[in-house]
Structures are given as C-alpha cells and as structure tokens.
Image (cartoon, rainbow, N blue to C red):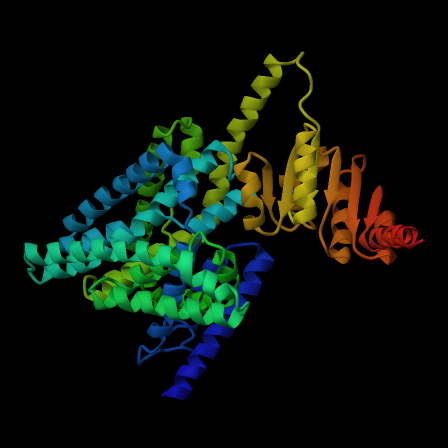
Length: 543
C-alpha cells in the first residue's frame, strides 16, 4: 500500500514537472498542462496511476488548503475599496446571470435542486490566475476593462467563503434539517469570523513581534503550518468546511510584517501540492465522457461559454464600458475557474453531488480552461481594435496639438529600476516597466504606469511594451548574461533609441557595448571609485 502510494506520487510529480516545462516552452497556462497530463496518466488513457484506494485525495486536499491559504494571504481589502462600485455591481451581476440560468436548466433536466444550486455556483467562477496573467502579459491590467475584470474576479474570490458555507446547508437540507440547524450554523459562522478577527489582532500585535526577535525562518515555517492546521481543524470541529479554515488562516497572516516572508517560504510547498491537486483532478477527468457523448458534452461546453460571455458582457457594460470592450473582456471571462474544482470536490465529498455529476462538471471545466488562452486573445484583440480606432480619432482631432510625452522603457523592477522609473516619470516621460514578476509591477500599475509581465529577451514582450517607439531604454537586471541577451533583442527592434545598461562586473562592459549599449554603468567600477573616494577623505581627515 505504502509503496504504491509513493509510486503514484512520484509519477504525478514527474508528470507535473514535464507539464510545467512544456507549458513554459509553449508559453501557455501551467494549470491547463497539469489537467491535461493528469488525464493522460489516468485510468481512462495510459493507466499509470489508478488510485484505487483513494489515498491521493488526502494530498489533493492539502493542495486545496495551501491554495486557499495563499489566496487569503494575498487578499487585499484595499483593492476591494479601490474598485468599489465596479466590484459590487460587476461581480454580483455576473455571478447572478450565470447561476440562475444554469440552475434552471439543470433542474429542468431532472437534477435535484441541491445539486443544481451547487453546480451553478461553481460555474460562476472564472480563473483569477489565468485572467490576471493574460492581462499583465498584454499590458492591460490597469486599463479600464482590465480593472473592471479584476474587480469581478475579486468579487468571486470574496464570494468563495459563503459558497463553501452553502455546502453544509445543502447537505442538511437533504437530511430534512429544521430551522434550528440553519440558525446554529449561521451563529457558528459569525462566531468563527469574530474569532478570526481577534486572532488576527493578537497575531499582529503580540505573537509576530515576539517571534521576530529570534530571526529564524524555521520558526516562521513551523508557526505558519501549525496555525494553518489549527484554524482548519477549528473550522472542521464546529461544523464548517475545512477549506473555510484554510482561507481564514491566510487572512490571519494578511497585512503584517510577516506576510511576504510567509508567502515566500510557503511557496515551494504550495506549488508542489497544487501540482498534485490539479494533476489529481486530471486523473479524475474521464475522457470517455467526451468519447461516449461527444455532442452532448460539446453542447454543454459551448452553452457554458456563451452564458458566461453574455453575463460578463452585461456586467461589464453596467460598469461603464463600451459594448465592444465589454464583449471582448467578457469572452476572456467565459471559462470555469480553479475555485469551481474546490467547490464541486467539497460537494462530492459531502454527498451533495453524485460521481457522474462531479465528473461532468470537471470535464466541462477542463475543456473551458483549455479554450481560455485563444478566447482571451481574441477578446483582447477586439478591445485593442477599438482602442486603435479611438487613437486614430484623437489624432484627427488633435492633428495640430504637441506630441505626447517621450516614451521610456525600464527593464527590471528592482530597487534600481523602481528609482529610475520614478525619476523618469517626474521628468514627464511616458514610462513602461517590464519585469518577470507581476508582484513587482503591481504598485506601479496601480499608479498608472504601463507595465508588461514577461521575459525581455523575447520579442513578444518587447513588442507589447512598444520598445520600438522608446526614446530611452534602461536595462536594470542584475544578471549580466541576461542583460546582453536583452540588449541584443532590443537593438533588433529599436536601432536609434538611447540604451543604457546596468552591469555588475567591469569585464562585461565591452560585451554590452558591442551588442548595442550606448552607456554602461558598472557596479564594480562605481563601487571601487566610491571606496577610493572614502579612503582619500579618511586619509585627509587623519592628516
């Protein structure tokens, strides 16, 4: 038994690694890769992992807990306040317009109302990860349509917890529970929220300052895991879904001096168990559903995409977007997100969903996720075409107006890149930042900077940042080899703009100048000069 479990986990992790590499090579979603490779190694295709004893479900649950913990950890209440009206109106309308028709159709098909409500609620979710990544890569996250789409996604994230609490109510309804049962569950939920608020206050004011003095990463990891397990167990012991406890544990650590450190330390565990979770979902995916009922499954998939696209279009239109932008962004939201898997898995384990219903939802969700990248690209192209028309109209009206601010591009949003960007912006430049990490770019995107997430050695990333039109480009990456490749790629697109480069070692200055850098600042040389000046000053003072 133990040997079989270890073998299955090794196969899953190896398959996840292979999928990760392929998806990065193809520049597509890793989540989709996990699901597809899981389906391939499952019993419906290759049969490498059978999981007859269902032991892998426990590892999948750990992946769910760490995923929800991370969402709670990164959940920013300030974003909710900033989006305000757009978040409430857009999110509520989108989820309602998806849930009502889906639930009605399912009940009409003969499914009991408890299952219909749970499935309809799950289908309302879109993927925060995929949409935000796509918007960032296209430089659209801070455009009006991007901000409104993110508002809808944040509303969905906030709605996850009450929907998780819905599962025990649906289970209780199936057992003919009375009003007292509902009242007790509601009171328990309220008391649990109060407990989380108090615990969050004690943690930030007392416990974290006490642990900080030890300066030990091991203590941080141990305390975080114990807290996650304790709060999750507390939620389960009072009759709430454990997933609610995992999300609440993330909220406890949210917004204090430990948040970023915990996120960095927990990241390897989260990614490992997330791979197990999503590959495990792929294992559950039964390819025979599409092979045995291809027309029926295809119609359901197309129906879900149409309903979600129309609902998102109406919701985005109500937030003030033009019809074309609303429809283009609505197409990008027309899929079923990762939280749907969390919700239907809980429903399946609680007995609200049958295995057949669970399999069907997973199959349709996987199909919609596979179609997400091309759908989102098509939607953003539609949005972009309207932006081009608007720009042309502005050029016709303002033909005699002065030219817009000179463009500048900064590659690398580290400390040096951040300072340089701020100075360029103060001087009136239209600055675009490029970085591999959306976390580094997020503060600048909020302030109105153009930002692009991606690898600056790739032409696609540089084209999205419009480097070919940049009068000044600054390469501020800490790796000289990467800087050389970036400079070479920039010069293929822009041969006339000024190009300045940060260089760590003096030996690489000549190489950077050979590939096209106009000015190279060597950290090694600058440090030597600064030290010599200090030494001369010190000698003068001694004399």
